[in-house]
Image (cartoon, rainbow over the protein chains, first blue to last red):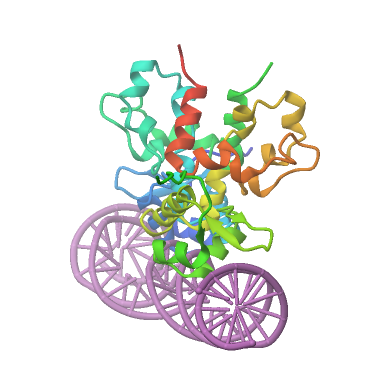
Length: 148
Length: 148
DNA sequence: TTAAGTTGGTATTTATAAATATCAAAAATT
DNA sequence: AATTTTTGATATTTATAAATACCAACTTAA
């Protein structure tokens, strides 16, 4: 009589997440401030992390510690993702979107006024969730160039 | 009765290049070892740098010092460039090329056996020369997604 | 209602990437 | 032929990104 907890259900408070990842609470807040992660926030502003969040952070940790990519490097890589194509923005929407023009910040860190994404919850967006690794971003770019 | 020196003519020895860039000779060799740059080599193995090389290195310096992107971060960003599309590789050529699959090394650092590029001089390749900045790479990706 | 956990902030530490120094052998220059 | 420069390689230094420690005020949960 147990229910499965969905992967994207925010359940872990920050200290638990920190323990799971073997890092300090402040490091988690730092990643958030740097716009690498968007944890769920309760009405009282307390953070909650899902299993998906944990995996995402593991991936970021790997980029920093194993691949030796700096946080600004990770942000720049995220900014390469053609979100406009995934979302399906029109020519005009693209040109008017600051994320389309940025090569230093991921789109979810920008949220330009008047854009399609302005009122979206980036935490729930595929662009944020599905492309947390270089390899996924490059795969998406590959698909843009399919010959067949 | 003077001839203009072409931008891509390798003329500066390493010490001159280092002085122009205000860095040490060894730093230049380090960038080369990390596959960020490909200076011209004389038959005696001595390096020569062109004005284009100098500009490229300035760009790399800016990424490291101003944008705070680590060397491995820069390499990873370079690896996002869809070289296969620029070169015009076939489906089969793509799949058989290690550069197509890498997301940590730029294509010119790989030079897979049996590939179109195997015997090319990457130093003279557009992929190496035209896309030394994030912004240029993102622009190329943007063009892949043109609606019209 | 008391103890434990979280908040955002600054100040400090640490780990290490990036750059420098030094070397003998080879090449270039004058 | 003598002086300067470049080569690659290792060993060392430095600059700083990333992580930690500490703080008082605010939640949360026994």
